[in-house]
Image (cartoon, rainbow, N blue to C red):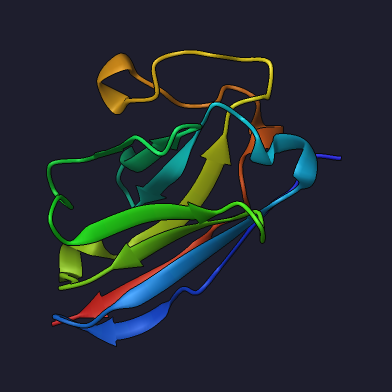
Length: 130
């Protein structure tokens, strides 16, 4: 069974920090590409960060220098460390991963986004107040 479970969302003031966690089931932790997306009310989904099997990371321009994506192989958890948060960072954050058999460019510039909804988490809410 494929599972991705996010946690760590909450409400903070601008300038604050949060760390999101995504626990992945063992059968997909080895996926070539995984990452984080977000969606604000009334807006489309936005890619935030990706990390590939070798630890190579990419970030949306809007979060570069403030967010850090990482993963812990032993715990099978992917993290998103968010610092210097801004009100525009508010939204629901989702983790996602490719099926283990899929190998492709792990970057939003190549429009990376898992097509199968089974490979997405349920989301965790982040609210940043000014």
